[in-house]
Image 1 (cartoon, rainbow, N blue to C red):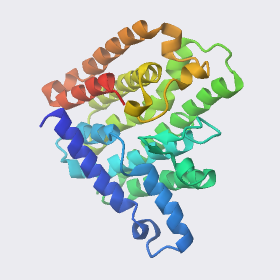
Image 2: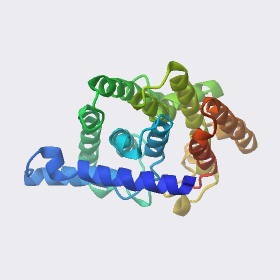
Image 3: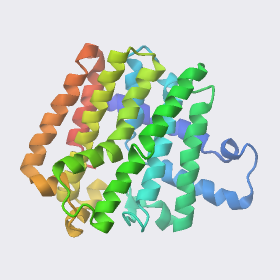
Length: 305
């Protein structure tokens, strides 16, 4: 199967799983109150009908290294996507990035309102951990606990939320006044990289990998997260909104320090090439079995949206 076919298959499988998870009866256990229907609709707006589903692909393909079929990794992939989409719903709010467009559609707060977007995000986050706790995620409770612990750390103050806080401190409060390249790398490793590391480690957890195999996948995820952010900064600097599916040139307009603004486009592109090489090297332990993951790194580097 080619990378494009693998990505399409992972996206379809994840989308179908998310659709079931986000059904009204699945969330409430019974027919919800009419008022709850609006909240569930906002949650579905945040999650369904868009996105490349790269993170679910990483979960499924990292699990495949240990002989697991896609369906054995799908609930973990869906839980991760719920967390990712909650973060986008909150990130787009006026108090944060103030974005009105996401994946070519109105953001949650723009389609509904701010308080609904906040609560929809809260609902998605908590639902993710409920999904990981279900027996259908994995038959072994110890594996489910390991997944919950790893995702909680990746998405919390030591990971994504902490990185967002650092980003907003620099953006809104000017602290630090002049962020360095090392500071931005640390910020992005938390904000963007942590969930990508979890995506790769999750397959190792599901597949009961050795410590060396899990470290290799974590190293791959770390490099991939850095590559993802460089590519994202380049898209903001050079892309157009119609192709990217969201507003562009916001960083320059806000005079925001990014890797591109500090290094320049050419040096950023060179660093992107080096980072892809580091990601690929981390997978050497798996040989050709990890070729789809290597192609995922290439996809991240080359993406136009």
